[in-house]
Amino acid sequence: MPAARRLLALLAPCLLAACVNETVIPQATDAPGPARPAAAAAPAAGPVTAYDGRYAGTITLNPDRTRACPAAPREQREITVRQGRASFLIVPQTRQTLNGVVGPAGDVRMADTLDRTIATTGAFAEGRFLGEHRNGLCSYAVSMTKQE
Image (cartoon, rainbow, N blue to C red; front, side, top):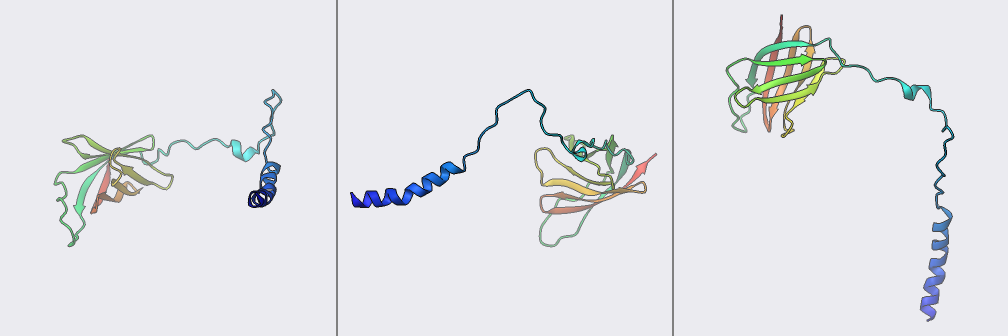
């Protein structure tokens, strides 16, 4: 018994300390809450539409001697930007499309909805899109021009 009393004597201060830090949950009332700072109420910016349009161009395989990658498509590919949302039809036969949102500086990351390792990153500037397409470990250069 003396060992049990000794253990209880050692644990008693810890148990009491745990009770002291309990948080009281405030009662729900109809009274207005504390005022929020004005900066927190700032409206979100709308979509970036400066880069809206259709871009067409080529995809080129970046050389890599350590792995065998599929060849780049011979046909041109297109990126369409509407209301700041970019869509890249990467495989027309299966309608595989990469999607992303264009940032204020023209930067974008378009990714596949099912496989996030298939993605194209780059930037729109002066009527062009320059970027990199990655499919797993394979890398391709993307160069497109805005179509009028």
